[in-house]
Image (cartoon, rainbow, N blue to C red; front, side):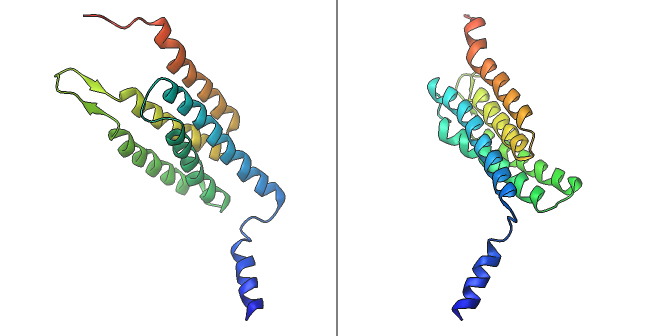
Length: 157
């Protein structure tokens, strides 16, 4: 009986056939976490509610949603439906970050929502093995979030 239990447990963990696959999974998930963390750190440093942990989890979750079916052999047409689902689901999360204030023209959280949405896209990109693209998108996002507010003066009415 113990032998059968041990064999069953071994079979359950046999979805990763070799060290190359383990390395690939680790690199993609760690990269997603680091890139999401970079964006989250910037948002947290700016005093925004969605910070380091939120962005890291969104990025890693998005990476995992495309990584697991991709490594399981899902074809690109089916994987595109997974991506569509992640994008729609993140849209719901982002909608919760947007708040319309009592003033008729005041809306808060749009940048936070856009940042979470982009973080999911970066996570999916890392999960798909497009590491360079994910890094470049993160650098550009950090420029938009960190540098542009210093260049563009807020309009004063």
